[in-house]
Image (tube, rainbow, N blue to C red; front, side, top):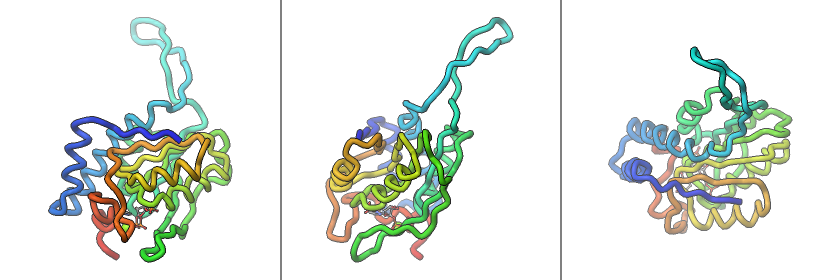
Length: 210
Ligand SMILES: O=P(O)(O)OC[C@H]1O[C@H](OP(=O)(O)OP(=O)(O)O)[C@H](O)[C@@H]1O
Ligand SMILES: O=c1cc[nH]c(=O)[nH]1
Ligand SMILES: [Mg+2]
């Protein structure tokens, strides 16, 4: 597994406001959207392309376009939904599949309550969207499911990661073609499995505590 921490002043600026407890939901959603577009730029660096011949009004030339099959984007509901628009802005032709997952607040174990993915993901590049990589349980489960269906290249785009979660992914997905792109790796997890300093509960901050 590879991890790429995006080091850019605009990313750091937006992340700081996102973390701030005074940031309200509409602003949080807007910033998450903007941040994802910046992360997506890095996350799609290895998106598969093919060479094409075209004509400009002046001359013939060669260029590139995204190759088939189209990339797949998979937001992890709820909080990952807040990253979807920002991602497909850069990849407008991507297909979108959905996974609904929730982490038990006591055991911190992740479970899946919704799954709307193509049965066959053979040969597909997949971009998983989940703002928080905390214990890593959610992403390990999600990525295993994508690979079980044949995905051969998975990039997880996360706003924040904890070192503990990165370690779990490295161990559980050792040798797998997986990349994590994130704005920061924070200090640690607290006793409730929250990232410190983090930004709190991403889903609650986007959509309210339900
Ligand atoms: O790395 P982990 O320890 O598995 O935790 C990360 C998960 O926790 C949060 O989801 P949550 O269960 O709060 O659901 P929500 O998005 O509906 O709020 C977050 O959005 C991630 O999906
Ligand atoms: O800090 C955390 C950890 C898991 N999920 C969140 O939304 N925030
Ligand atoms: Mg939540």
